[in-house]
Image 1 (spheres, each protein chain N blue to C red):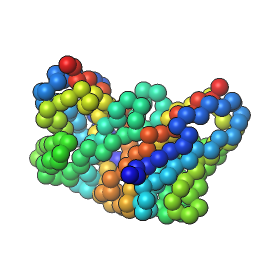
Image 2: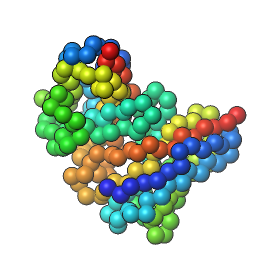
Image 3: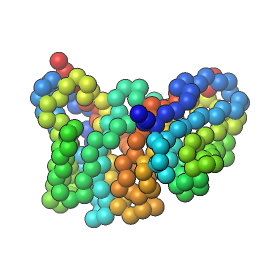
Image 4: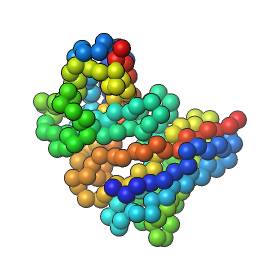
Length: 115
Length: 112
């Protein structure tokens, strides 16, 4: 059954390194979202894809963050020159369509720790 | 998006109804009220949503006041597995505003 899956579940890296986080959405879902959750806070929006294109990337904190979804299914969030402040849980969600009435289904997240 | 206000934390006895309030006094006519919850170390889980009318599903009931400025999520018979952070979110009906704004939510602890 296939819910949203994310890999890896945990990632430890050193400051300055590059990381990639992967999201497999529910099959057939056209909309995909990335959120970031810091300790004790609610998830914060990063970017939204409709199909292959980024329809809204207003939540990306700076140009070190980039995401792709080349075939309209799997998405990769890429973080360059990681900083300790990037440590957080990165959550992916998908929905059947892009409408605001669509329910978003979340994956378990990737816990990123930057040392 | 309209801002929501929720209590930071609440306790509920196992088997009793849990009533989680949410204020959204600046909500506009074209905004849904959504509830999600997040159990420790898991991703958020959709619970229920509504626009004007009260709603009920297998998980919970959502009561929205007539002026739509507040709502209450009701878990009719809370279990230990309902211990989680509950987020009340308002979200525009119009397309193009698709992300969820979570806030800090209410931490519900169900006590045996």
